[in-house]
Image (cartoon, rainbow, N blue to C red):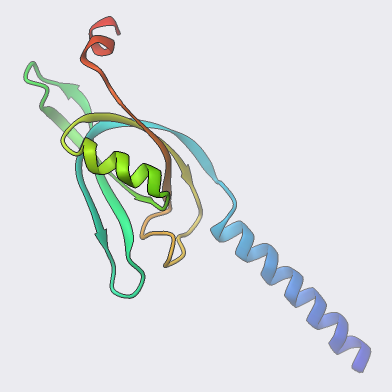
Length: 128
């Protein structure tokens, strides 16, 4: 019986470790999103995290105003990216994200974690 409890405990610990890794640290998908950075804030009750909101537009008007848009919510936990985001609010940007299966309280509210950001220049838009 003692041997069964020891092996059962070891298997349970291994299973829980794999589950926590898969749920919170494994990158499910990664990619780029482009849009207008509408909101960026530092919020939370116990754990303060940086959260942002981008407007992704499928149709662009002639005044650089997004039409037929969808919102993309994301979290940032890198201080260098936070400094960049605070300066880029209201601009068209491209972000690289990593999507997790879930979010830990101290990592952010969303499963989308941003690891790089760049400004979309008007000259680049004219070329494309």
